[in-house]
Length: 281
Image (tube, rainbow, N blue to C red; front, side, top):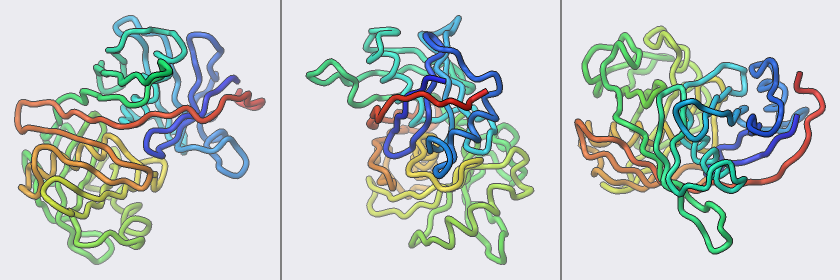
């Protein structure tokens, strides 16, 4: 299997170019193998870049545990970079098909004619509880109490094509992320599991985020999660419409101007190396 290792703000995946190379017969099994950071290539999962009947390319994304996810904000930026840099489509605005719909990407091109950053129209957030999905009350689900591990946490839930549970805290700790995060991921209130964002507000236009990602554990960054945080910050009046979000792997810029508007996310995309994996299937 020919692959390219890429990352967006440290959220790293193994990418397979289905335009020019064979793809794994069993992507879920391949994702589990290649994601292993000791016995595999290492990454948060596997992303397939495929032909599309409705867009310039299609993205399928598999978490490190083999589960398929609808969307990955950092991943789709890297797909945009790959599609342009490898001449699959040389338009500076791309349309990428995902499990959450077709997204529009605006590319920043550097002096070497390579993509350095990408702005993604992430679409309108989904706020209806049944569509997120969650059994917590409210439409939207804002500042609701979730009981887990003997604690009562105040949570706001958003879907960006995949489900997110956003929790604003005075300080982000390892216990919250690494112990409470996995329990929230599989809490009965979230029938399809959930991505969990712990957020510290630094100013009206600046936050810090750590994410326990559904199917992958803690990741260096989560683009859909950062988008959900932007929405949750506006809904709870903790932040302004435009914020800078500091993640472990780098910064993302996000804007959401309220009901009826789309979320826009800007961040880096980087290619790390290419190689051949002998045991994909």
